[in-house]
Amino acid sequence: MARNNTQTAQARTREFRAPEFLAWHVTQKGDKSFWNKVGAAWMHKDAKGYTLQLESLPVGGRIVLREPLEDTASAANDAGRA
Image (cartoon, rainbow, N blue to C red; front, side, top):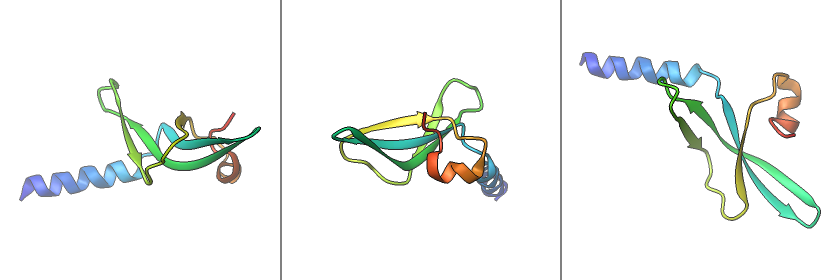
């Protein structure tokens, strides 16, 4: 039973940690690029890898990982794009 409580506490902690990167599905249509947020990535505790959580599975295009922008107001429009 204790193990179950530990896993729940770890899951809650993980939920509130901000991701190091946002995952974007980028497609090219002519001269324009279209960026759609599809997930996020968190660094492992040992700092030797990342966990990538995708909310959708893109078909075609590419997935780009970018650091989130500091300003949350513009994050909805440009989050992580250069």
